[in-house]
Image (cartoon, rainbow, N blue to C red):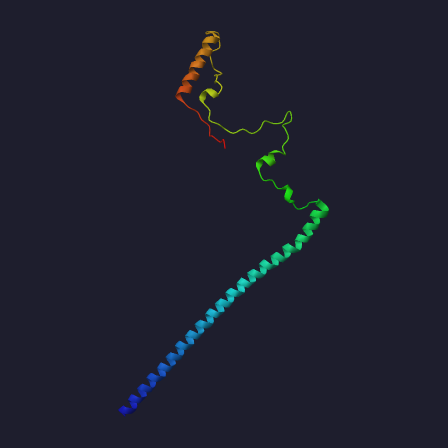
Length: 161
């Protein structure tokens, strides 16, 4: 009896080993199929994106003929010719006309300015009741302007080129 019980244990161990091996084989096969499905789904998404791009391209090209007809018939547009392209700024400047009388001044760039470049500031509350002569007042203003020029150096941002 001990012999039969031992044989039964070995049989169960072999059966469990076969079932475990089959389970592992089936698991590997399922994972392989899953990865194939994921790969196929990615290809489907890529193909759908490519299809959308091709549809857009097709619609764009279909509209190009209509746009070309409109440009030629309705608007009179034509594509640029090779002689219409300019190589230098001098060629572009050769097309300009001289300034007409009454035209606005050209745009000027900011430059560094000294305090003496600014006009003298006169206080509206200055004493103008005749107590001093105008020469004295102007000399005082000149002294104040010179002191301000010596004390402070005003500069604007230099935007020249």
